[in-house]
Image (cartoon, rainbow, N blue to C red):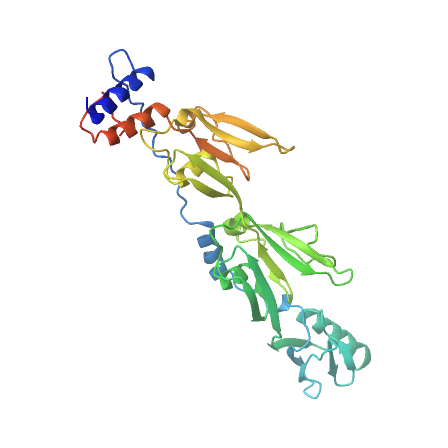
Length: 347
């Protein structure tokens, strides 16, 4: 008996040992439908880019003046009091009749009101003052984390969060769901936020952090706060979950946008047809005490909406097992070159 014939007989015996049907054939289970994520009309990144182009910078009246800003100040009907002046390193300007006074930290509108009060108290009746910013000082802002072009940016004038994200090339594919704007505290000055922006624990002493939901920003264009000199805009990377086992593209997937099991499987290329056993898949998860917990799932039932599509957490591992019998039959078929049939096809 030659070795090839002996190998064929041995494997046929092994097949019967694995428990084939009495007819000598095995029934191929119905293939798992291709699992796909719900297609969105535009991605979060595209929505942010669109909104960034649509939303103009906030009016200069919302801008806080600072050193090196060049101002054109006009006192109507009083040309001798009108002048172009640059804020000095102390944050002050010098105006005719009034002398030096602090302008840093005021908005143009507040400076107008202040000058009207001073001129009205001492020299003029019902003065009207306008303040126009001719040149904005250079602002240094850092963008870090999951943006396409992280780094320091020198900007002139007021810029919104959406504009800053656009300047940095948009979000990296691994971006999470939040953006942190880290801002230095100035005395007892409160954060000037808008809408739903919320402060959180500071990243460093003497700083405050504004945490903004990127999904809300992309969906509604707000809270689109004004970025200030010295701000650090940080986009944390999304945490990762993992899809392993008998799938076409095993590996990691970012946990964001309430990623579900079926969506993670879709990213992993769906189970391998004819080999996977998706009806006995498992989620491996760490509990609050760091202990491993196995959560059994049936992908067939999830796709059929008979079981809930579980939202994944960071560090979850979705494992799709492989059928030992089918793997054996596939290997057997490859070994014998497809020249002998055992009543089952793995494909």
